[in-house]
Amino acid sequence: MNVQEGRELLRSWREDNVRRSMDVVDLWDSLLSQDPEALGDEKWMVLEQVAVAAMDVQRRDVVERCLKRLKAEFDLDSIRVRRLYGMRHEMMGDWESALKLYDTILEEDSANSSARKRKIAIHRAKGERPQAIGELSRYLNDFLCDTEAWMELCDLYLEERDYAKAAYCCEELILHNPNNHIYFQRYAEIKYTQGGMDNIEMAKTYYAKTLSLNPDNIRALYGILLASFQLASSNKMPAPKKQEFMKMVMWSSKQIQKRYQTKNAPIDPSRFIQAFVSQPPNGQSGASS
Image 1 (tube, rainbow, N blue to C red):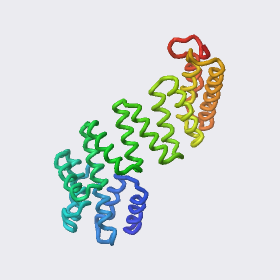
Image 2: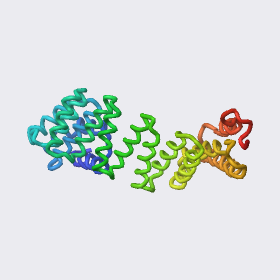
Image 3: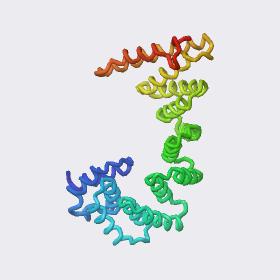
Image 4: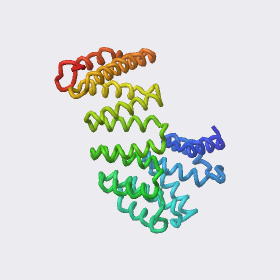
């Protein structure tokens, strides 16, 4: 690989938002660090990309060389350079210095999303979930369409076991992208975890939607199996609905086995599924009782 090919590869990773940190640093070490001037107009973008990748893999020597070049060219007047120095402080575990740098950025540009996200990341790294939730909620008031932020807020609420608010975050994600099967799957899993017949029935519906969007989603099939079985095992469920849910149990179990056979998987799930459906929850005597 020559310098031109290396530069194009790094550019493609930047454009695709791919964070292949070890590969970026290896490419820098083996090829691009020898003559950064050969990178032309992309030199500064590459240095920034390499610096961030080096932070990910704890290559402090590479971080210092890249930041030294960037600071010499742009000084700390540059918000992007200051952000990189803030991330360097994070790498070193110096949270307070990092927060001070991010605050100086936000004093100049209160809408700077990168600095606000870095502050949220620091709260998470320090285990300060309530502060992270507060910062992220305020961030989403200004950047409502940031799906990554909604997903992170959902994760934070799950860590706090606040399933109602986590479900709300998933609802926002589904509104932003109604064709993403992962969002429907996560919403179904949260509703199933919440428990109660209404939530479990909703979980089954969303597992089914997940499967319609991605027929290869095996977790959705297992979700349909579990939710349908729970519903069929409820003493409060009318007999016709119990029969309907048991049909879903049988259908989903057959589909799961078929998927394993198609993939030539070394594990046969049939005996596990049979053992599961033959042992109703809560000590009930039969799946249709």
